[in-house]
Length: 185
Image (cartoon, rainbow, N blue to C red; front, side, top):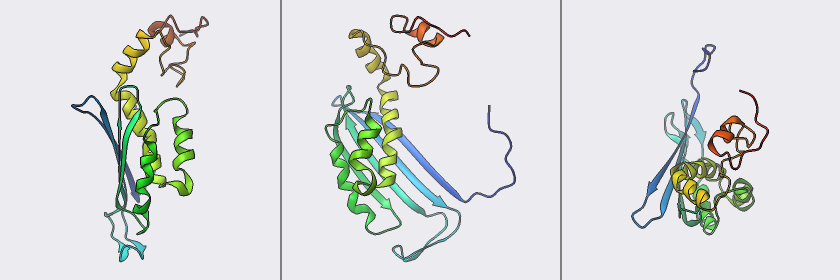
């Protein structure tokens, strides 16, 4: 169901985030994140010649992580095409610190500790959340197979109310891992 009709309004800003997953020929995966912020009015800006024209990105940033089927990061690359300050692109090399990390429980906290605040770029770091989800979605069948072989509970169990270990969905999909107390539905 779509949202209810809005009050009268005008568009002022659009943020677009796109994440794509690519299966590589070498067995690794590339997850690419791309983010833009675009205003509908001109913005004063010293570093960009005095004005950022309406429709030109204030931010346009890219991030690629390369990982294996266990979600271990083998490479990382960040790029800043547009930013409000000339100094912004200087931090992109910090994202190489992601090499060796594993996407999984505690990922967001680890990323914020490593690349949050003055240690990174707010926008590149924000991209890593949806990129991690994209990686999981792309590799779901592989991860599911690994979990079944190892008789592990699925990693997505207890990540939302529908997939709670005591839900009817968990009882149906993963009876060997579901709690005995099932809500009525």
